[in-house]
Length: 315
Image 1: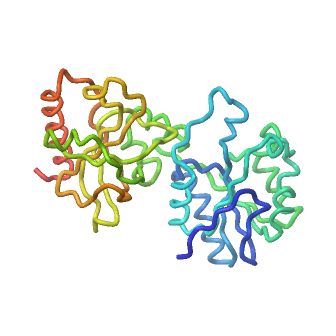
Image 2 (image 1 turned 120 degrees about the vertical axis):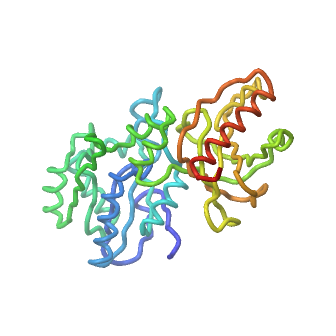
Image 3 (image 1 turned 60 degrees about the vertical axis):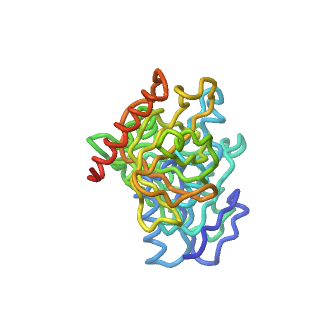
């Protein structure tokens, strides 16, 4: 598979000749609802020929409209690009969400796209997609304007789970509550962290529970606590079972202000400093807490390890 092409601004997108199938949206988290939109574009490009690209935005529109309360993102641009690439997307175009872009009238939105991407053949969005100045444009307007310009418009119906529409907002609430199991059901995959292993203080090693310190600074922070995880990387054929702590480590660090992700593998650890690892979050075990001392902390870590082992039937 060719590497994913990435461009900033539709006018700068150097795409291959042929029809352009363009999925449009923020696609934060690339959840099941987003996938319905993107997969429609991928399948159409395969059947009709052409290139499938995703048009997304940065920063999130809330940064412009609610600068004091910007939406925290589930995934960064690099992670989004890797997920889209695995789905068969050829290019990710990040459109700067500026006041000028936000002021484009709804009726001018498709011509604006077509002027910058002359090979545009089809547009793919979710049924709740809103666009144009004041978010006045809806699907009916998009379809009507598409007919005038000879563009196909595909609208994917919203995907429901437990009777409610899947949304990035709903997933953010679950992650902040620590309910990764429910978040995973809405995402359609296991929530994951990617990053390099970095040196730590080796406290875990000294107390009998060595950990991998994974460099990771998410915009949206999941609930501080202990999770059952699987870890993979170039040095593991399969994902390895483990238990992770994400938080401020109040028992051993009184002044910590930035959370840290530490992972303890239940078996032999093939990873070391500098290795790139993927941590998949399976289940929330307990919230982070401050213990009276290291001895009490060790006893709890042993219980956490046993609980994770039970999940993997390793006892």
